[in-house]
Image 1: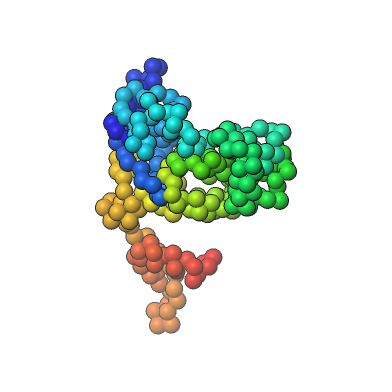
Image 2: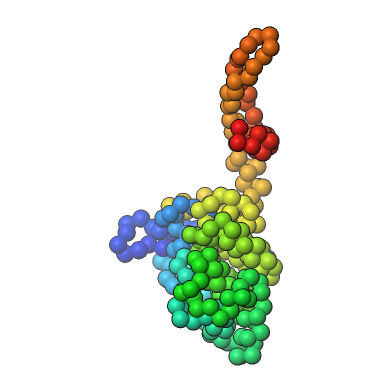
Length: 262
């Protein structure tokens, strides 16, 4: 993305303000930012839903404004809301989207079997979408974005509204599918960006404020903090007294594990 700008007609301030960022094959890049930061707008422009006001997007060396038909053959998208048909089964969803990507019926069936195993839903293959739990619907929506051997996959808040167990299984799925693909995901959660992101791009008010690996960002900007604890402790000689300790966060985590509920 080079100097991307998006200004909506009903808003004086740009939703995206001169953003320049590079995404790499074989890596997950996490867009980290609050609501209204511009994450969804950038992803919508990348996938061709909205035109940019100005700027350039190159995908595999091709300008998306002139080669969008070719680019979309290897592009996958999972929006914030699940794009599912209530009365289609899990297997029918995957086959349908695979054939939209140009796969033959036989190829679509083979890909369906593989994806069902990868997302852990082979037992739900004949279940209609409206009967799935929220976490299963989200996993199906994410899996659909990878069908047709998509090489560039855009995921807009893929774990929003799911329980911690489903969230973790979605993380495992993304890490498994990362190889050979360029994955771009948006999130509000620092832990998610830290675990999944080979690179983290922090955006606010439409601007890119910093970008780099989690280790680089922590070394450059992470000042850390101390937590002060006051505990009542008994001494045989002096009676009861307060003990004040300042401990780094990592040491606090170990102490919390050792003390349990204390």
